Image (cartoon, rainbow, N blue to C red):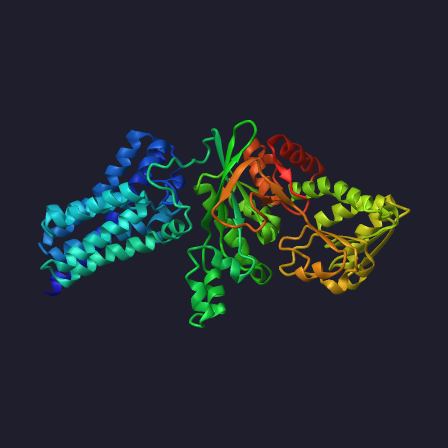
Length: 564
């Protein structure tokens, strides 16, 4: 008996190792195919055919199915149905979790994991031909799979449905408990493997069978970009349908907000939405995947290393999804030295923080704002303008633009020494304009115009900082101006950096910029993808004037409109 247990354990280990063999990976690698694109994010058999052609796709499929069949046939040599079914589970687990210690020294990386459906087909064939389960029991999950795929179109859902049927049937068969646990284990393993696919089904972003998914490096009438977002509040966290079930549990005290925050910090980037319907006047279509690692704003300040790591993971996911350009939105735009470290870690995809076109939209909007200000009978030459966040590139650019047109500028920021250096440069160029620096928001009380562009997670301007009749241009994302400021008599708040892409854009997720509108940093990502001008990307703290002008010009040509 001990020897039989030892042989059973040994055969299960062999089944695991056989299942982990990267046969398809080796075949495609030798053929010069980028195997990192052969992943379960959006590539099934139908898209593998597009990527490598029918010959290699069929050979790779047969190798995957064959190793599953071989693993089960080897285990069946003991004549124990229970060991045979457990070997099916071991082979599948080996495919899904190839051991790092074994493959990283050989290939410098761990082979990518696909969906594993062909391995499942191989192990089901194995348990049928060995008699471990009746033929009809092994065929049932295949029939269920085909039915669900044909009716609903979601391959991952069809796989899970087939394995539910298999586990249920095996549970009713006169077979040992280990075999029943093995069948259940297949379902659990697949459920864990497809957890992200399940989330995408809930968010309506999972591709259906037969849907043509753009592949990296293959430009056509449709180009693909990706953009990284994050929730600003817990309310935003619930807006993703995959997390909506948590809201009532938090409201009833079953789960604490702290637990949700900790969970969010442990979630890797995921695809939560898509922008479709963006089409330029020239007929080019732009698809944009919305990715998220749901870190809340305070985490970017308290755990910058975690934020940078998640941004790098997001860039890798964007590349695997077929995107050419990866944009960093909101607080993602400042992580990793404003994207420099992210680009260095993932050179296969263009990374941008969106700073150039964001500055461009402001540059384009300011003349109109000042003109409207004067048309209301206000004397611009005698006005005082407050610049909030003047330590930053965007806000300092605003100060430089309006300094010649007003009597006085208040530069407000966190670093007074840096403010003074910037103010000195402005004073040399604008000798007739009074320029003062401060870190005190109370100084804004004298301003007739306020331009604000900070990266603070919470509002920084409140009613006590604003006098009646002030015009405020709020470029901050999230907004720098608290909602209560609207109650101050005569105050006008103008949102900045909002752009409407060409065509009829649709989205499954509310970006909170108004219907059909996106932030300028996202628009920059789309423009790079549309033009193919990857060298125009915005990285680091510096923004080149020539790139600002490029995005303003190209946005006009492509049909992007600044919302004012």
